[in-house]
Image (cartoon, rainbow, N blue to C red; front, side, top):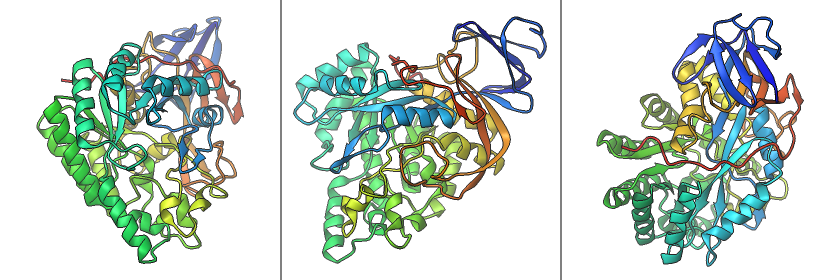
Amino acid sequence: MGRTLITGGLVVTAADELEADVLIEDGKVAALALPGTWAGMDAEVIDAAGHYVIPGGVDAHTHMELPFGGTFASDTFETGTRAAAWGGTTTIIDFAVQSPGQAVRSGVDAWLAKAEGNCAIDYGFHAILSDVNESSLKEMDVLVDEGITSFKMFMAYPGVFYSDDGQILRAMQRGAANGALTMMHAENGIAIDVLVEQALAAGKTDPRYHGEVRKALLESEATHRAIQLARVAGAPLYVVHVSAGEAVEELARARDLGLNVFGETCPQYLFLSVDDLARPDFEGAKYVCSTPLRPQEHQDLLWRALRTDDLSVVSTDHCPFCFSGQKELGRGDFSKIPNGLPGVENRMDLLHQAVLDGRIDRRRWIELACATPARMFGLYPRKGTIAPGADADIVVYDPNAEHVMSAETHHMNVDYSAYEGRRVTGRARTVLSRGRVVVDGGEYLGAAGHGRYLTRGTCQYLI
């Protein structure tokens, strides 16, 4: 691939901010040096003056082509990873789904086939466990050895993905033995189904009732229960898409005890609220996701938890469904609205806006969006930082570029933006994936098939 030199920028990682030039050779970071050190070198030069030079984003929670509610997420691996690149994200970790009654391996193989030859950026997989039995537990051991080191389970969605406490405990015990990280969708799905049934019987069918029945207390109860099961099993736990302050309290209590318990939140919970779910004329359906959007007062609690590290990662849970023809499946019955929001292209810019708003500082931005997800899921220092030997996944980021988020200009394969009309400052100008420029100055230069599958190590935070 030859040699590339990024000059004149402010290099920002989770650990440091320094004015430095970055030398890239054969897709890897070769060295960093004082500005001008390599003047005159035979290399392709990228001028980053006035810009940040940051690691490519690592989005550890996406759902491309996910089947849900009789339809499929509207982004393919090709369109979704291309949109990620536009937004400055250069690695995704998606979810391979075990179908009930099938082997975990068959789900992994199916998702590998979906992604192979189609991704614009590098990608890995978690595995979703839909059945927990002796066979699937043995498969966990093999998959960990092969680099799939995290397994997601659901306390929600009875009849679809739901696992009971006994199944969860068995899988956690296996994870304690083989080093796997258990990822948990923590909502009390059994109780939620009762509330859904009661709401519909009372004629409460609009999208806003999706948030009302999925109560914050049922998220915190499930989070508490997942933590206690993990303690019994002696297993690490990662709670996905935390939306409620009460659930954060459970995580904070566990972390204060020194437990291997980690929490993730998503931009939708930091920037959107139940006010969006209550939009008239069925517009609220665009904002139906699970866990649901919460009242606005929860946002301050989530931001505080991100500053204190009671929440450690911001991922997107990118799972887009078009309003026309997909979200509309739930007209007259909110429980039939496909759950999910688009966001893989927006995360880096929204978090940079949070830096400007004084919510977090620059290094915490990179820690939450790049370094910690890479460490959490066994990809660091190959991903998530700019250091000799790391993959040259690098973004030249313009901190002063103002733009308005809109479905008219985004690159996700969905007919609306969850952040329509929101003005933000900061944007990826030049994006490199393993040293190859894939986005530059408003032009896409990447290609399907450039992205490589990543085998992962185990979580690097365990004590």
